[in-house]
Image 1 (spheres, rainbow, N blue to C red):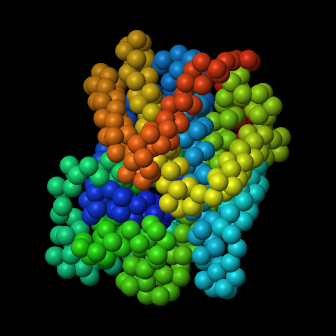
Image 2: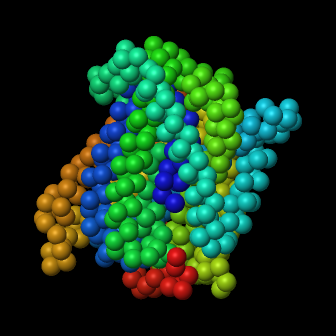
Amino acid sequence: MVVAAAAPLTVVSSNVPLAIALGNGVGAPYGFILAAVVLFLFSVGFVAMSPRVTNSGAFFSYVRLGLGQRLGNATAAIALIAYTCIQCAVWGFLGVATNTLIEGYTGFGLPWWVYSFAYILITGVLGYRHIELSAKVLGVALGAEILIVVIYDVVVFAVSSPASLGGAIGPVGTLVDPGIATAITFAIAGFMGFEATVVFRDEAKNPEKTLPRATYISVFLIGGFYAASGFALIAATGASEAVATATRSVNGDGTMLTDSMEMYLGTIAGHVVQILLVTSLFACALSFHNVIARYVLVMSQDGLLPTRLGRIHEKHQSPYAASLTQSISAGALLLILVIFGLHPIAQIYGFMAGVAAIGFLLLMTLTSISVWFYFRSQPHRRGGSAFKLQVIPAIAVIALVVTLVVVLSKFTLVTGLSVPTSAVIAAVPALAGVIGLFVMTRTNPSDATDSNIPSKGRR
C-alpha cells in the first residue's frame, strides 16, 4: 500500500521530468536522494514512537500524544488538505493518461475529466469494500510497473557509454543550484503516503514488528528507485538534451519516459508502459483514497468530525462512511478545478503536488517535534538510547525546517506564477492548520488508544 501510494512509474514519468524541467536540470535525481535522507531521519523517531500510538491516525495521533489535542487537531486538518490535494493531482494526470491511451489506439477521445470522474466512482466502490480487495488490485499493478522500470534502468545502464553515465550522474554541483528546491518539492510529493504503515496498523498482523520494517524498507526502496531511474532517464536522453526533452514532456509534447522506453526496449515496451502508467496512477489514487478515509475515520471517532463518518461496515469491516465522504469531496474539488479551466498537468498536477509537498513537510516537522517532546517529558517510556529518541529526532526537525524553507523560497518555480499568488497557494496547508487549531473541537472524545477497526477485520 505504501509503495503503491508512492506510484513509482507515475513519479518517474511525471515528477522526475518536472524536477528536471523546472528544477536543477540533470541534477534533479539528487533532490530525491536528499528527500530520502530527510525521511530516514524522520522515520527513526516515527518508528520508535509507533508502539505508543495504537490507532490509525498517523501524524494526527502522534502530534496529539506529544504536543496535545489542539496541535493534533491542526495536524489532522493539514493532513486532510495535503492528501486531498495530492489525490486531486493524480486524478488530473490519470484522466489525461487514460484519454491519451484510448485515443491513441481508437482515435476516439473524450475530455480528460470524464475519465477522472469515472475513476473516482470506481475508487469509491473499492474503498467501500475491505482493504484486502484494494491490496490485491494494488499488488498486481505495482508489481508490473516496478518490473518494467527496473528492466529499463538495467538496460540503460548496461548499454550507455561511460561518458553518458558520467554526464548523468556526475553533476553534484547542482546540489547548490537554486532549482534544487523545486526538485526536492516534487521528490517530497513522490514520497507521500509512506506513513501509511501506521495508518493501516489496525489491519496488519503483528504491527509492532511489521510497521517499523515496512517503514524503513519503503524509504530506502522508494528513494533508491527514484534516484536510479532519474539517472537512467537522463543517461538515456543525454545530459545535454535532458532539460529540453523534459520541458517538452511537461508541456504535453511527447512523454519523456515512454519515448525513451520505446528507444531502448522497443515499441511494444512503449505501449506497455502507457498502459502501466494508467494502472500506476490508479493504484496511487486508490491508496491515497484509503489513507484519507482512515484519517476521516479516526477524526470522526475522536469527535473532530461527525460521528456517522466513523461507521464500520458490518460485512466488509471497512470505514465505508468515511470512504464515501472522501469520494464525494474529491469529486467536488476536481469539479471546481475543471470549471475554472485549469490545465490537468501543468496546473492541477503541478499546483496540487506542490501544496501537498508543503503540507507533508509541515506534518513531518510537527511529528518530529512531538516525538522529541514525548520522549523528553517521559524518559521512563523511552525503551531505547537517548541518541535514537532525542538526538536524531532533533536533527530531523532541523533538516525538515531547512527543507521547508528552501522549498518555500523557490515555490514560484513550481507554480510559474507571481510571488503573491504563489504565496497564497503555498499558504493553504498552514491555513488549514490554523482552522484545525482554533476551530476544530472534540464533540464526542473517545479513547485514543482504542483500535478503530474491529480485530476480526484485520488481515
